[in-house]
Length: 200
Image (tube, rainbow, N blue to C red; front, side, top):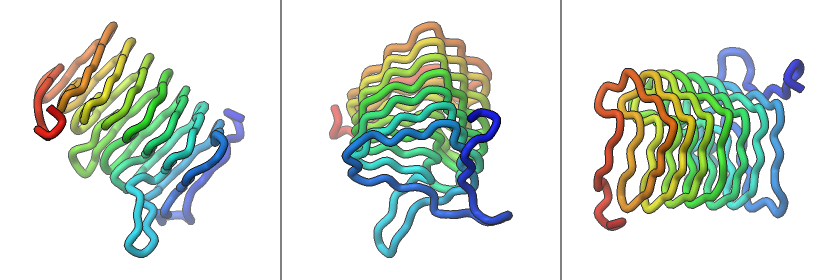
């Protein structure tokens, strides 16, 4: 419950590899789960970049919070369907939420103090179709919304307060942004450009 969440963390003062769900046949449901102090999942020469990873595995997140991720992504969803409501991510070294070749929705969520090591995005999608609504971004070192590699995103009721760039559409992607407030950006509120020419 909100008053008594499930807590996943390492021993005091340490980090741990986090969570990996691979090729699950049925959806995973995380509800009132708090994850702290993860780094990337690595087994020999095999690795996943996220502290919490879903690969070819459908997932639903409800009122979850991720703190102090030391890996490349706090949450990484790959080749999966997802439905996220009430996600809070704070204090990451790099990206908060990364979706690759996936389809889903994210709503009623907040991302703050993202990218302490530099180059951290709030939501970063590649080859994906995502609908985002009611999202607050605060103190994002790179892009609040990064839409790339032929992705499609609709985003509404978005608030950005402190970021390198508010929203970026690149490499053949489509971003439809409505009802957005973008404040205190260092580079640009909105950008569109080619980074990887192979995507057109």
